[in-house]
Image (cartoon, rainbow, N blue to C red; front, side, top):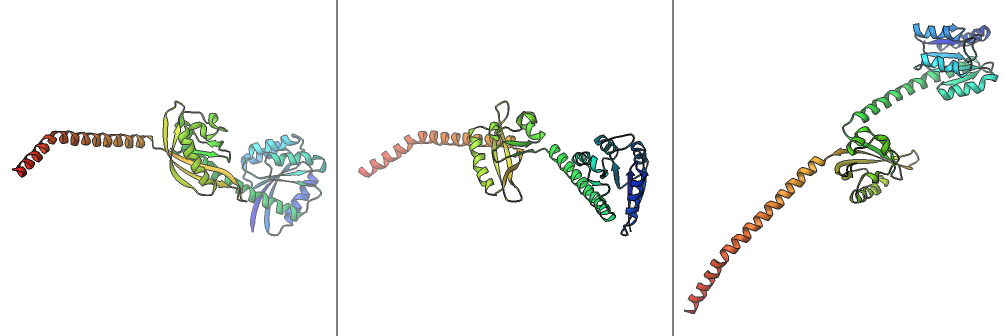
Amino acid sequence: MKCIKVLLIEDNLGDAVLIQEMLKDVKTTNFQVKHAQILSEGIEYLQNEDFDIILLDLALPDSQGIDTFNRANEHAAELPIIILTGLSDEEFAIKAVGEGAQDYLVKGEVDSRLLARSMKYAIERNIIEDKLKKSEERYRIMVEKTQSGIFLINPYNKLNYVNQQMADMLGYKVNEMINRSIFDFMDKEGEKALNDHLKKIDNGIGNIYELKFKNRSGSQLWALTSTNPIYKGNGEYLGSVSIITDISARKGVEKTIMEAMIEKDNNFRMIIANMMEAIKPLIAQEYSEEYHDRLT
């Protein structure tokens, strides 16, 4: 049988006994309840013992209203909290849910089945939310630590997100780029190239291409860019996410090689031209002698 450790913080002994009796009626789960009558006592228990969930009355002798939840949550942010409230305190309970409580139950309107179900769901939701937070944190760290620039634009080509690397590449602070058009960071040539690719992206085609940006100093930054569209569940286009890698050095090498090849070609052409100039008299003389021989 599954065991769930519960911290019940409730100053009304009658309500506390009733809640514990309800939990005893649940045959599928063993609820081990620790009861505290005041918030400070509950916080002390939290510091010395492990629990799976907290049942919290907002109106306690040493704390009242939303402050009760905030203080409890401060000491148990990783635990799901269900608010126990009377009808007169329901407004505070709703506010507590908005602040992060998993649920609230009105005392006098709860039976063992509803109480147990609410607690189990609260624990499950809390586990899922915790996994999501950890996953989001891992991705956030990956995004911020990557050597690639990352940016998100909305359907109107405004920047919704820019990572630090992207801002550093272009010589701006992150907050200087947010909500500006991506076209503010490229010249007309780059704007046209991006527009062409965005049309493909809007049609659901992700692609990889070279794109020219303009940094704060006005210098060019060539980037290998991978862009993919973002959609809502109903298929509505929300914008796109792009990852860029600075290839300016490579483009510089390519330019140097191309210039060297052009220079080599020009030199070769010049050599050929000079050679032709040099042999023209010989060719002319050869033809002249051959013509003379034919006449004689």
